[in-house]
Length: 601
Image (tube, rainbow, N blue to C red; front, side, top):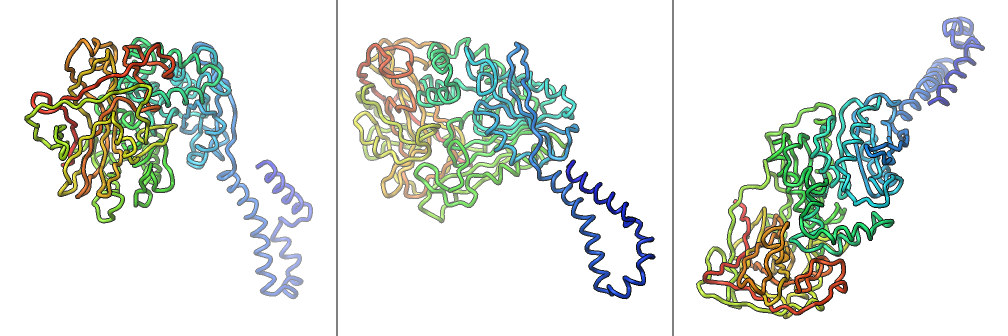
């Protein structure tokens, strides 16, 4: 801008020296000569040249102001405990640091990389953008004894207060982020910081314990180990050991931002927000819990938006998810996300109106990818979540021909037994993973194992659509002091492939709650366990069958239970002993082992 300004001044000065800027005198002086020599064509040329001299510098100024890279300034922002967090401020192009709404992004992945990505989304929207390295990561301080996210709620609030004190902030802040960036957004929202007026929350969770660290009471081994190694290479051993030392939902989770400041209690939240998740994302249920927590229990009820896509951890461009390819243009919902996020930010930061009485939920209904005539594989819209549904109970049956029956409990008792050897676990094949292959995968390779029980329905005579929460109830017994039980829900196609829809796990030691240890199984007789299979939106097509498979491992997605009563360890070889368990599932009669499916109505 300075260079262009000097160029304009030099041109004007040169014109002045030559007396050219006095257009009237210039025309009078050269009138006769101009008329005789130039004619009409010369007149046009003169006008064009003069226009170029005026318009070109102005165009340069406008283009530079709108499309030039934003000005960046780096600060080391001190938290209340004097730990400095490296913070980049990208000023809106052409704003010259004048007050604007602020977009806040806090990341453990490096602010420099995030600045390039998020700059594409927000630099042209006249917002200032603040990107900060989380405590203990990259250029921020606090690398020795920190646990990732432990101080997230405090650091988030301190950072927001710092932003509000800056002359370039107009008092309105919205936070955005995906994955780990989203998780810490949940935590400081629970502190209800002044100035935070909106949030865009993509593929994250407000409760790390039950969705990311100890799902069903069992360690999510691959996710925990590989993710912490990646974001905290300098002290990952300390962090992993801390997690292993706290397998129950104890004071570690009740006195830090991992649980206390938000968790199941959303009363302090007061911001409108957009929640975005994927049906096969590792944080899937966390996204839904976050939406429901904000919308049902906070001070921002009725001002929440939800998008659920048929994706894993992210929004790939192609229609492929796992081993399926969904036949839908823009199936990943990215255009929908951009549109709804823009509406939310305009509402929160600029005061533009949103019709909150309309559809606030968009979810992709998955279905048969081999049949183009199905009434599925498309986005559906609703006013709220969960959508209207009826919970159907499908009972596990004793017969081999029809192993799963709807709403009719078998009259005869039957015991289904298998041996679980922790030295030979069932391998992970797809599902809601992060580092491992994720999404809907054919399970036939593991269903043929001796330690996997199968319960399959008869062929459906019409489409069967489920949208919402799933869970299994099992009556079981074991000769071991402790063991795990896993449940998978699959869609069996006419050609035999068994596609994974949802799954879950329970560590039997946590069957009475995640903050306690239940009595040993081998001393307890028949026990009932509830296994959370999270949620889905899926249509089983005509001619397909519904299948439930049961086992006791899913490795390395989950750690392996040694069947000895020892608490979870990082690796199988850390256990003192690993024993074979004789596990039994009881069905029929008084033992109504079953799976509950939310049929769409």
